[in-house]
Length: 357
Image (cartoon, rainbow, N blue to C red; front, side, top):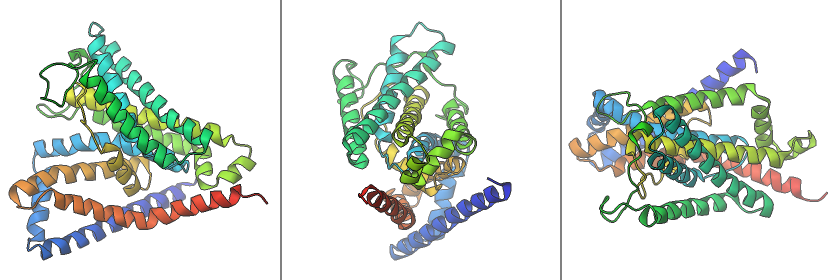
C-alpha cells in the first residue's frame, strides 16, 4: 500500500470518527434540552470528570485499558469476516487462569511469575475461542450464537470455580472471590495511588503489533482477503478454514491477555462478575475505530473518559449515569447504519457463493 493511500485511509477513519461523535453529541444535546438540563454545563462537568486532574485522567486510562484488549480481539475476527462476540468469555477464562497461576506458584520470582500468568491467560483464552471456531466450522453453526452461549458458560463456569473449589470464606459477602495473587505477580503501578498499571503499556504495544501484523505480514493480508471475499480466497488457493482457526486463536489470546491485565493489574484476585460487558463495549470501540488497531487506542480512551466523566456528571450535574449510556447508544446506532449493511452484504454474498451452479 502506498504512503498516500495510507494517509487517505487514516484521514477517512478520523473523519468518520469525528462525524459519528458530532452527530451523537448533537442528538444527546437535544435529549438534555428536553430534560431541561444545560448541555454546556453537563459537558463541562463530563470533561472535567474525565480529564480535570491527574486522578480523573488516571481513572479514564484505567477504564480504557481493558477495552483496548477486547476491541483488538473483535477487530481481528471482524477483519477476517467473522462476527466473533466471544471476548467476554475468553477474557473470563484468561483472567481465572492468570489468577490461578498467581496464587498457586507464589514462590516464583517476579520475572517468571508474571510472564507465566500471562501465558496461562492467553492459552486459556485461545482454547476457549478455538472451541467456538471449531464448533462453527465443523457443524456450520452460527458463530454469533456459539460465542454468545460460550460467554455465559465461561462466566458461570468461573463462578462455580470461585464459589466452590477455590472459594475463600468471607470474601465480598456472597459474591465470592479467589485468594489474592502473590505480590510478585502484580503489575507495576504507573501513577501512584491509582489503578493505572503497565497493563496500559501492554495494551498499546499489542495494538501496535497488531497494526504491524495487518499491514506487513502475509497472514495479515490473507485474513483481509478472506474477509472481503471468502470464495475468491479459496480460488486463490488459501486454506480459508485454517486461516479462520488461526484468527480464532489470535482473538482468544488477546482477550485472555486482557483478562490477565485486569487481575494482575487492578483486582489482584478473581471475583465473580468482575468485568461483565467488557466484550460488548469492546465491539463498540472497535467499530468506532473502524477496526484500526491504532484508532482503537483512542476510541478506548474516549470510552474510558465517558465512563469516568459519567461519575462526575451524576455527582455534580444531577444527571444519572444512564445519560452517558444513551450517548453511547446513539453512537452504536450511528455505527450500525454503516456496519450492519456491509456485514449483511458479506453474508448474502457467501450464501450465493455456496449455492450450486
